[in-house]
Length: 96
Image 1 (cartoon, rainbow, N blue to C red):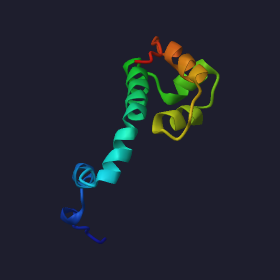
Image 2 (cartoon, rainbow, N blue to C red):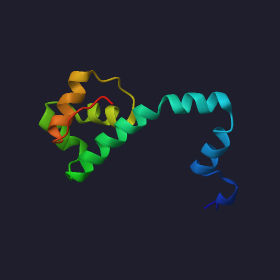
Image 3 (cartoon, helix red, strand yellow):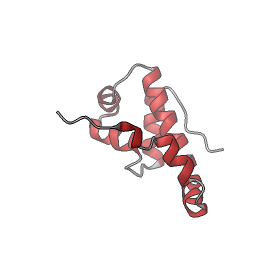
């Protein structure tokens, strides 16, 4: 078995700190902040209700994969979909 020296790996926090020094990267990263906040809110609400992705999907009549894509940022949900997800989690969509 080969032993890997992990001391030479970069952590995510180190990578992010270094990358944010690049103005172009920072601009794109900051542009995604609202999306990250929304994803985090959905994920946190689901976990607070002790629901799995499959539980939420079943409640919504969707496939678990759709919830996975939503939580990973790989989908572009409609307002209607976000409203249904929010309602299933006893939340409301608010535009601020």
